[in-house]
Length: 426
Ligand SMILES: *Cc1c(COP(=O)(O)O)cnc(C)c1O
Image (tube, rainbow, N blue to C red):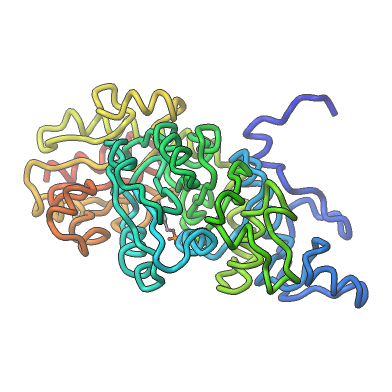
């Protein structure tokens, strides 16, 4: 082997995997088992005491899932990762390690609708208080910091409008506040943006979207950048204080720059239980092998569709950061030079009714609540994903009544444009 470090496409195919040592199987097998036999009593005791790494029970870890974890950690440039059952499970497990009841975290207001719900309602019942900030106004993050702030949460490419977040500027705020920056990188995928290169301390994904990429399997993942010092000021006791469930060890002291990933596994996943099925891990691994090819096609198609819409008389405006005229184009050139993603919004001159009408007339675009499928998807956020918000909050989060969101797939762009043309014209 040469000294060359493998490139992104090579990692997407190979990272974390090797031929199965017992059978020679080249594809990663699905280890469809709940539990694993110990060598002897000492081995069992050392696994339970975190003195040795190994398999115990699939709620805590599984060899198929481990390949997925190593692969995504490599693609994101992190030290370690933990796969869980869904993107939302990843968010719960991350914040459980960071917040005590009564603590706060700051979140960008432009987020996936489900995250807005989760942060506002479910997390409130845990005593975790979200404070909203505007990703287009960096000073709003600074103003939101209090002594109880424990983390900042943003999306790299933000739902629903595909706006680009200035990760470096917000990471500077996080560093000054002494709190980790968590970046939801679902809409970009590491092919377009690697948040750790721009100052993120933790990356989360819904694997359900572009990483899995085929609309067939739910999953989530947490990537530890290994950059944050958890010992300062006793702010993060889950990581810095002795753990009674593990003979009093301190996770940061014992595991160093992958202590956060370990905490997520042995305190979060073990006790909360949202384990990823090894079958789903296999499906998502297969998806990741073609991530670079798919993502480039998604972006190229999205740009062509956005350009078509921008020139159509029924369309009032298009919000796609890949268009030279877009207000996020400068940030897109800096953070996502290969393409500005495939999820974006446009607004119709005919308002709410025109949005509902368009969605019902499209044939190739499927009307559903998902993004990041090979197939092209469409939704009218105001009547669906963002319907729980009041009108002012809808507009603020980019989901006004006249707005339609697309997730552009990898079909032929001419067919996608023809479908939009017939639906807009009719
Ligand atoms: C879908 C999505 C989530 C939630 O992921 P699930 O796998 O559905 O739980 C979180 N963030 C973003 C940006 C998403 O698109």
